[in-house]
Amino acid sequence: MSESAVYVSLDSGNDYWSRTREPLACLVFLAPLLIIYEVGVFWMTSGDSDALRNGADLWMRAGLDTFGLNHPLVPPLVIVVGLMLWHVVGGYYWRVMPDTLAGMLAESLLFAFALVVVGQATDLVFQRVGGGTTMAFTRDHAERAVSFVGAGIYEEVMFRLFLLPVFYAGFRVGCLPPRRAAALSILASSLAFSLAHYIGPGADPLQLFTFTFRVMAGAFFALLFFTRGFGITVGCHALYDLLVGVLLVQRA
Image 1 (cartoon, rainbow, N blue to C red):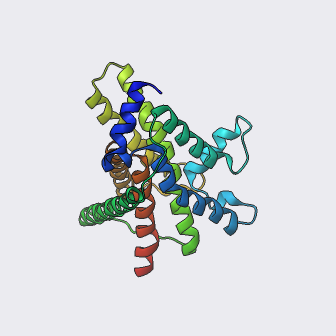
Image 2: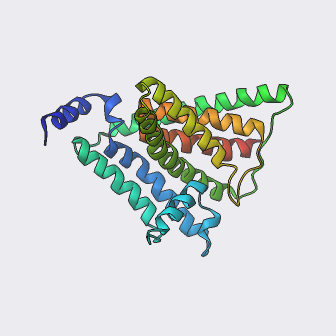
């Protein structure tokens, strides 16, 4: 192991704020969500698993299928292997502290509640100008919950773990300074994240409120990804979707 890798390992191993960003901690944290989603999709569908799968998951599977990788377990294995390789290349310690996972859960809940507040405030603003909307859900609560967990995982893999660095690298190749490249990559990935919800067979109807809020949510998740890491971003996204799409709907 190189001297720089040892330094990274020692530095990150002694600081909670850095440990939460390590790939192994992110993998252990999101593993239960990944299992719940994949097992839930298999259990609740009878042959037509695509009906319950998240759009980003389906796009990822379609891309892998072009290379002949069409086994149902390939996408979750890609996530697992990718994070493991990232951990090896980064030279991080091979340990995850329980208090790190507890802190990641607490942060995910905190940021999810913060995004709920932002969403409610945005909805109120749009209602005042006649553009507010209430989204209707017709699926069973358990099915919605499984689908929302998948959204938290696969949308973050696609738009934050993959697309955000691609945009950033592209802007840096274009000779933009780091801060400007980061800002533009956040904006570009957030626009792509929002637009993706209106593409495909199960697309939502395009509305100004939902489009605007999803751009804001995409920027929120991108900032989390940059500052708090992939694991907490996935946790926040999944918990937000569960809060808004299951718990608040039940109380409405």
